[in-house]
Length: 216
Ligand code: AP5
Image 1 (cartoon, rainbow, N blue to C red):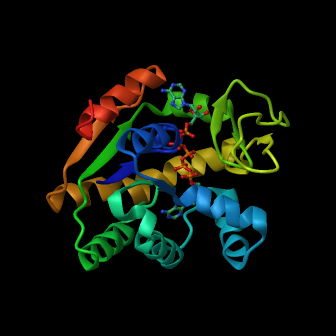
Image 2 (image 1 turned 60 degrees about the horizontal axis):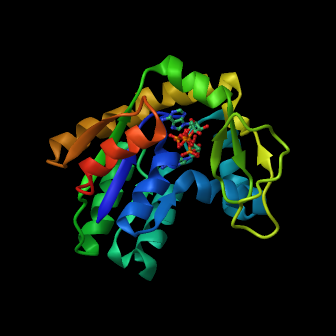
């Protein structure tokens, strides 16, 4: 099963993406996580992406299309994959459609997480993430060790640079200008787009998402 997650910054794509992937028994690919790992490792990809990410701008399509192609060709994705934030522009949606057509694989569902902007700002201003495994948290302090981290050595909780107020405001603008049109593109191309109300307890939102992927 191939699932695309769309939604504004802080809507819960990362949090619910993990849960949906676990329920479907498939991996999750998050371009944000791939890029942050590259920044941390100081690779050429990371050096190119860092400035865009810190400002809350999108990394160029050509970079994302390369990551997308490589990730989808990997044998681990044979049973399916949850794509978190992998598609944020119309050219990226077109690129994913071309890659899936080459692989003879259909896109099963697009989950669109919807939530009011004031709730997003509140979530992002209180978020810390593990700098090892990228798990997001609310109500946990920066510099705490993430005891449950799957990485070795274990990660530390940090604030993301793009969760600073100026970058958050820019990310919201970028979402409206460049990613919101992707929803219309999918609808115009006959995709199964399911809107998920992203406000509510984690388990409640999860139940809505699982129902939309046929696991509810
Ligand atoms: P990315 O890391 O994907 O950032 P994003 O899309 O802005 O999304 P977030 O990770 O901020 O939020 P989320 O929706 O995953 O919410 P989360 O689950 O963490 O991308 C970062 C950057 O990389 C981009 O800005 C861009 O520069 C670049 N990039 C990545 N992909 C790209 C692409 N395809 N093209 C170009 N550039 C790309 O939840 C948020 C918080 O809320 C957490 O603290 C969580 O604990 C909490 N929370 C979650 N659900 C609930 C709930 N139901 N109730 C209460 N709290 C909740």
